[in-house]
Length: 56
Image (cartoon, rainbow, N blue to C red; front, side):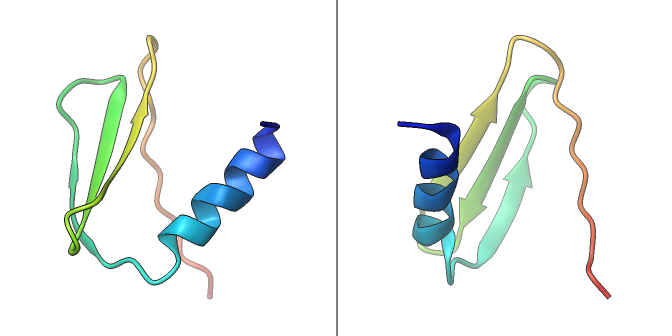
């Protein structure tokens, strides 16, 4: 699977999800938990920067 295909698949799976909470258990991990109980994990051997931007 290419990165573009992976991105499209993730986008389609996340449409309509409502975030319950964001967790950081270590500096190389981000977990987003959704109201339906599903979770999105991102982790790396290197620290991950968490950045949230809003479109205006």
